Length: 132
Image (cartoon, rainbow, N blue to C red; front, side):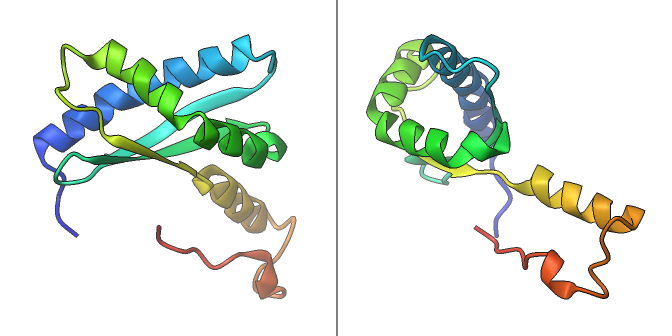
């Protein structure tokens, strides 16, 4: 895999900041109190046409439902972002949303290391990680 260019990183950072703001406002306005949505990472393709957005959603049990809502509102989110970034970006990349489960994965490993659960005795405890 190639190293990200400075341009890709810059666009990713701009999108990450604005997306976090847009999504958190939308959740609050939608009456979802006590929900925290953070954008953990934005990867932009080399041709700058697609941005893969990785979200951490708390509480975790609402993640799937929220992700579906976000995906169904992608055109609105994209439009809002385009308005905010029109002085920085000529074209808004297409947005693809994913759940970032790395914190959950780290939490599982920490529990295992503390001895609450032992993945060596029960290997089914740690899911095999898939690269996306």
